[in-house]
Image (cartoon, helix red, strand yellow):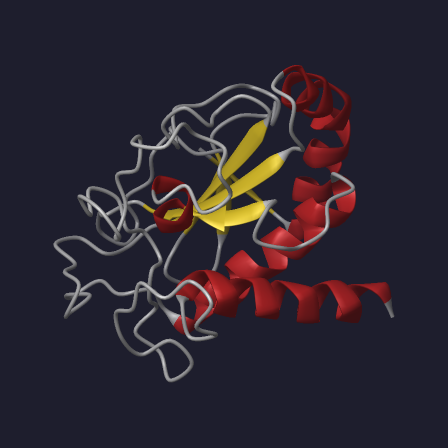
Length: 198
């Protein structure tokens, strides 16, 4: 793992953009950004994700090639970037446990999404920036019906369905609810995207 800055992430994303778009278009879709938590401890990073974000908001990359296909989201890894928060060991739907997402992690993830979206020419919306929970429930219709494994079905993967914050305090499977983790993170990312463009 290598510690990086937002500027480094922008540079890596811009370098990977042509290959990411080539891979995504071969699948008939846009490039995707998938948001996760590791279900591990703080300071515990995994190379399944392109970018790991630690409890203090520090940014770490597992590869210098963001077009590299890593195993972060089932059936969705090609033409995508996986970003994860190092947290949520033994989290449950009613309690995020001793290692919940920190405020610094949440803000850092939103900033990373803003930088990635600009570098990859993406709109920050639910079709292009998804939590693993949203992807697992196939809310964009990318996977065949019956392949769902998220909160609405088996609940095998529910990363960031809620954040345990005032803005996203509790479990819900209503994806239009502004309090879901995905909606809060995309809202913050759009805020940072506007701020960075000023």
